[in-house]
Image (tube, rainbow, N blue to C red; front, side):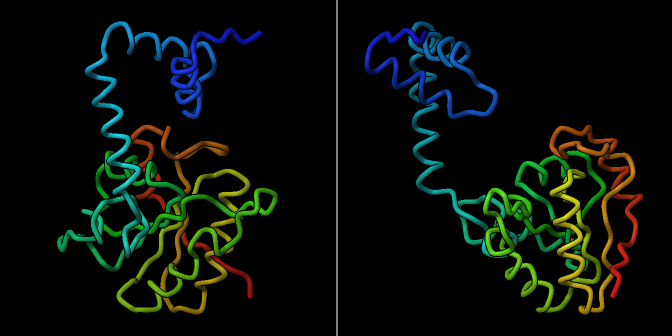
Length: 204
């Protein structure tokens, strides 16, 4: 049985519940903590959320989150344009960058192929990925989707899509456990997986 406190507090608790892994008890604890101990922090959080929701969009080139036309990585002229790492989420970029050792570019799918959830190629921006690769300059595409069933299917689909482009297509593999989510894998494992990537042969 859900106990309601007051309209405003109930609304605040419900707002916290949109976060992944936050249930009713955790949401209640966070809401009451802010009200009792840190109202200034709560206002800072509210301001940051409003600014982010209104100003953060997608990078024009790689689809990473940013509030400018191009994200910091795409704007960095020191990056290697010949390497393009395809990931499922912006969190995966953070994981790879924190691991160190990779200085190429990225493309963010913001998901993976999942017909049951209505996520097809258009939802992942694969037309933009195809256009990006077709514009030239990319020598290798590293498919760093997660090693779930959907992630593997997405990697295979992209490899099929790009196989006539005349470039190397590799798949992140070694060190990443099957069924694992890239953003939760430690940095050393990710670095090893990138170094040990393998070519992805597509039957034709």
